[in-house]
Amino acid sequence: MALGAERSTEGVQELSGVAAPRFLKPGYDFGAEFEFGLSLILDGIEAVDAQ
Image 1 (cartoon, rainbow, N blue to C red):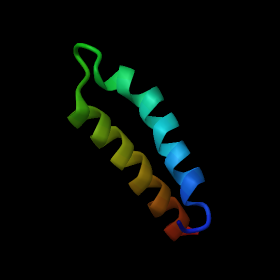
Image 2 (image 1 turned 45 degrees about the horizontal axis):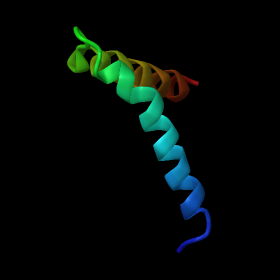
Image 3 (image 1 turned 180 degrees about the horizontal axis):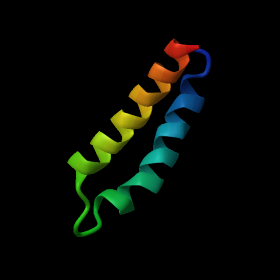
């Protein structure tokens, strides 16, 4: 096992425990959430590139 692999697995388990209830809610729109997140990432890249 690679150094830090155990910690990485724990992080995924924690993230899935937090995210799963949100994804399973009625009315959750993955596409809308994806677009929002992608826009944030692209805006951040654009801001860094403009500096």
